Length: 248
Image (cartoon, rainbow, N blue to C red):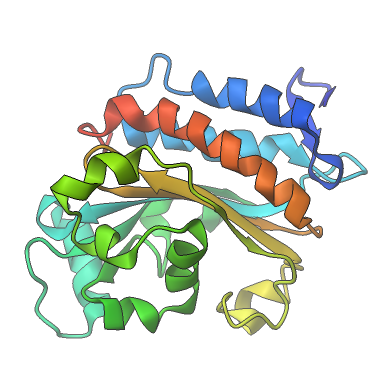
């Protein structure tokens, strides 16, 4: 860990240790202090990782960091419902259909710093297991985290307590270039120099899933990725008070 000229702690993702894991986890647990919503808290979280994770030269290591949360279609505002309807391509949504909603984003491009101007990820509909399996990144994220897809789409109250208290794995793509799990290879991966992708998340007491996904311009090892299992619990602690107060 080091301090930059703005007195902001930074962590070298290429030499990320248990000490950095502990320091970052401590910072995460305080992200909800004084916040009014999960959206506000998640905005702080993605900014912390985007600004704070650097390469060996002290430059930002991530091109893009995003925070997602599943949310039932009927609880979305009109704009997000409309966005999900477009992606469904005319298929009528059920009121309890889950959507993977982009709550916060921070990145190298101007349009990557507001969830409301994202062109393709504001509210991704998850109408069925078959549909999710056709979205390689989403399905692989859920699979690698170790969350049963059925629990994401249709949480079972009798199983939720055990599932919610479980520590989940990480989503890790060590080489993004050419990976079938990372879409937009020509539009995003290649021109932005994306080398590795790292994600983590879990289930909230409401049964909703949250996930942080980071797209790095440097290689990230499996050993480093595994350290984010513990950080994931700290992120969960930060957003937990806002499980019923999602949007700002």
